[in-house]
Image (cartoon, rainbow, N blue to C red; front, side):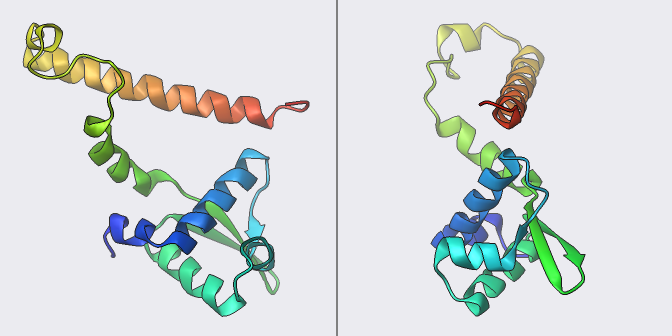
Length: 136
């Protein structure tokens, strides 16, 4: 399997992922290849090539209905990117080595990190659910 960072390094693949995210947030159960081609203004072979890479990386799933294929985002593998990126984000939280973080025992610091990630994930899920409500 390709490294997730190599997969998302390509601009067209990132555009496909963004399109699938936007469409799933709007309540769509999948996006056809022809819709992706139209939205991106790319050729069908180019889009198919990128969708194969995304499928191989488990970033998209496909549902077949007759001769049509509908793609949906499977964001789970992006957790690896999130895990790598989070330490670089400066959100004003306590940093290792400053007074607040140093005061926590290792177990408590780990628990605080886990709770913080869970809260961020819950916030993201809630925001997506609210976007799907009619009239929003």
